[in-house]
Amino acid sequence: MKNIEIAGSGYAVPGRCITNHDLEKTVDTSDEWITARTGISTRYVSETENTVSLGCRAAVNAIANAGITPADIDLIIVATMTGDNLTPSTACLIQEKLGINSRHVMAFDINAACSGFIYAMHIASAMLGQYRCALVIGAETLSKIIDWTDRNTCVLFGDGAGAVIMRPGEKSHMAFYADSAGDSSGTLQATGPLLHPALENCQRTFGYLHMDGKEVFRFAVKAIEDSIHHVLEGTGVTPEEIDLIIPHQANIRIISYVARKMGLPMEKFFINLDTFGNTSAASIAIAFAQAQQQGLIRPGMKIVLVGFGAGFTNGAVYIRM
Ligand code: UT7
Image 1 (cartoon, rainbow, N blue to C red):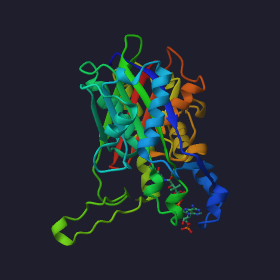
Image 2: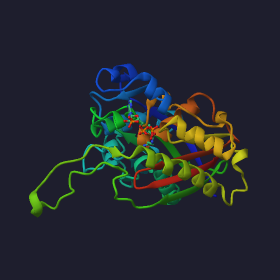
Image 3: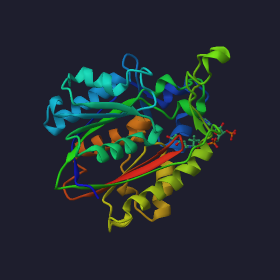
């Protein structure tokens, strides 16, 4: 286990709230179907913001919550699959907006889809020591890659960003677990603008997010349970002893299935997918920040963050606060 603390957290969502009833007007769906099959009631979608501005707002909130200044940060990692550009990275553009201009800063993006924030925390933990203060962000504008005429996907996702400040700290410790299993079969994918070599036919198209929901569901429930067991290996802590589990917010049925299977009460699981929908790499980051704001995260508590996503990827972070 590593002696690392989360010094602060914050989140941001865009201004426009889309309800299930709003979606009834644009696709063949119903509030009853969406609520019963997913637990989602609303999601926030960006009209004027992008991934950089959402990530930056979450970062500003996390920096204020930690009581530090941007100048204290020397490592910035952004987990996203909807960065505004191929380059410069979202992390570099957020660095500029935050005015972090000291010379010894490392800033970069990673893409592990909905597991991205877990992966980013894992990477930050390995780099802390050489770096003294990490800003770790999960940020997405999924609305850019959603086909708003496809009822199979458009009801599920939302935009947003969450951030934490990680730094070495004697009081709390963390353990990490990550896994991936390459899958190009299209079970969960959004193909990129550079799929074809320029010499082939110069196509510059990108695909909307597409998935086989049932197959992803099957992967998700196993990935969450496996990740929780793996991250606790060697900690001496059992799942029953965990005070709060913050899972990727994809579907309430995924979470309640896992709770039942593991014999854990639903009260242990933090849920905000009803409000925000699935915000991919931002989801666990937003949930952590919201739980902290609500006073649900206190010193001494044992917490697990757990995610799964396209790739396939999955992973977990154990935190003794
Ligand atoms: O971050 C990871 C991202 N993805 C996930 O976590 C997704 C995991 N999977 C799921 O959450 C669920 O599989 C879904 C919510 C996507 C779908 O729920 P389901 O219970 O697996 O439904 P289904 O796909 O089996 O569809 C059942 C029916 C179908 O109609 P028929 O063939 O039975 O006539 C669908 O066409 O529901 C229909 N349907 C809808 N009906 C109303 C699919 N989407 C909708 C909709 N409104 N939005």
